[in-house]
Length: 94
Image (cartoon, rainbow, N blue to C red):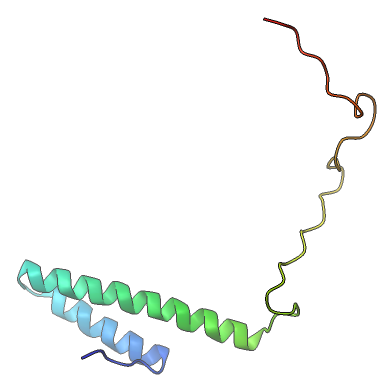
């Protein structure tokens, strides 16, 4: 049966219990099972965190639209400009 974690505190309590379990002398199979459970709970905690951040700071962009590219750094070239920009520079034949 899969446990439901409603809060980070629930997640933290379970992870602490896992740490206590693996701190003792346990069979390898049990340690691997607990490791997999802890990894799954960790991914859940990341998902919960991302959801909370998205709720606290909603995107200003309509859903489905890509974010605009960040502005170019000052002094960075913007495309090809200046002498030789119209045609590629010839290379020497080998």
